[in-house]
Image 1 (tube, rainbow, N blue to C red):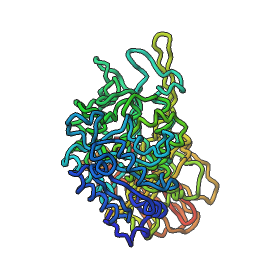
Image 2 (spheres, rainbow, N blue to C red):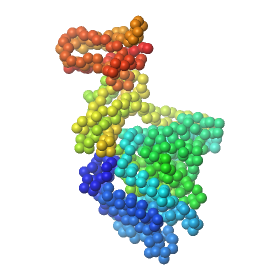
Image 3 (cartoon, rainbow, N blue to C red):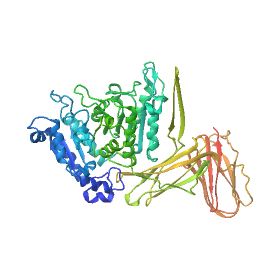
Image 4 (cartoon, rainbow, N blue to C red):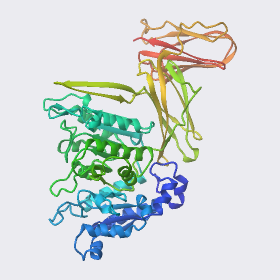
Amino acid sequence: MKSIKLIMILMLVVVNVFTLSEEQVLRLREVEHLIIAPEEFIPLANQLADFYYDEFGIQRTVVDQQAIFDQYSGGNPDADAIKAYIEDFFDDPSAWLDCSVLLVGSGTDDWNTPDEKNRIMVLGVTDDNFVELNGDNIPDIPIGRIPAQNLVQLELMINRNIQYIESPVLGWWRNKVLLVADDEYKSGQLEGLTYNSGLNHTARAQDVAEVLNDGVWVDKVLGIEYDFDEFGHKPEAAQDLINRINEGRLIWYYIGHGNEELLGDEYYFYVSQHLQLLQNAEYLPLFIAASSNVGYFDDPDFDCMAEIFMTYNEGGTIATVAPRRPSDGLSNAILLKHFLQNIINNGDYLGYGFLEAKLNCNASIINSRVYNLLGDPLLFVNPPQSDTSIVIEGNPDTLFVGQEVEITGQVEPITGFEIADIKVFESEYYINYTNTLGNQTYTVDYSKFGEPFFEDEVYVFDGIYTVDFVIPEDIQFGEHGRIISYVYSEVQNIDYVNYYYPIILSELPSSTEDDILPSGTVRMFNYPNPFNPAVAGAGRSPATTILYYLPEDSRIELLIYNIKGQKVCKLESGFREKGTHNILWNGQDDNGQIVAGGVYFYKLKTAYKTILRRMVLLK
């Protein structure tokens, strides 16, 4: 996105995920925002504050940590002095939830020992302690921490934050959420046999998938779907996880066992082994871990996974949400599902979405408090704004095999969108997984997102775009197909999503060549069908004859599609008189290239009827 000057903010608020809504802009301008940093980090902290003012008109006050000590604790380092300063700084309780505190610098639980990590003090096991302002042990203001240990790390993280907002890399990755779930094994035993245990990790991932916006592409790496190697690890799961991160995901959320450097006993991700494989510097996700100690950033002797991801030059994450201490599986699931709904469905910024979840999700507040946000609380990590403006021609309830479908999508023409990248997905479907070990049985139902069977890019004219495709016969049928259109402008560096869900996809054909047609109806068939390549003569191509009958004069268009619904060629078009007509198709596309063997569809459009037939080319 181009740098937005203040006078343009309210003009563009509805067209970019990284541009705050008009209501959010006004709310964030009218409240206080505080950044606390050590003296060495003040210039870069000011750079971030200046960016937010220039970009959104949001004022962030930057304060030197030592100045707080000088004023509140006689110059001596004291975490309670920081808390006292925050209490005095935010004097309007009615606005607290819209305010923010950013601590710029890492810190440890042993401040008195010289250590490069000791930049900003910590207060107990959670940074929430700094913003518990009314004595009830519940946080009142969104807070985050940039865990930089030195200027090199801080410059990397500040620049990443600015680029993430100012010049996002467009693409489908910004509309994809990755859910990663541990399997059912622990120390050779089955665990989490009941839904309420909180340890049924696959069930927890399914819960999240079912509440997210239907326009978001939800991807899953589930430990139960992979085999063990001789070491009790699941390397194929690890590779699939790394591949997806490198392809780009807006958010990836891990649910399962773990510690400061490892996700899962099965080694889904092991920092010392897998970090070097991450190459996603252009596609930095928000990383969320429902796993104990993954965010244990205040250990003076060890850098945890959450820190390392944020400081890794070749990729990593834009921000992390993870616990600093052991945590409870069921409470984790409740908290983080609510948090994801806030930032994905509601478009909340990280700090607000996270604190609102802690306050209102009904999970144990004691457990929620061990979670910290490592990142800027004012950062937005949301999929593109979306709506259900896609329309299927004729508004059918069900789409059938062989049916030619035309869809129309719409975006606001003032946004300058240029290209719509459309994907039509097979039906989502459910799987029942069961595993028995000894006298214990583990079972879980979960869904798999349908794969796209048609993809096309079209230009958007005056806010409108159309595309047509054919329903093939070799897809996953069911009641939960969907269409997602990712619309973007490389000129203005903005994007949007249209979607249609659910669509019933039926394997019953809408019409066949055996239909009994009444007199006076358009009729069409081809012969031979299937048809084979010609065997005589060098360079001879496959051929079939398409015959059609018109009951009256009409303009016509005869098109060939492949099984993916993509147009292969236009055989003929123009005015035709009443009667029988025929044309040879020699198996070539519009460019004169011989096509591959397989199923094809031929569609005849007339002024009064459109019909579709299926044929098979053998090679």
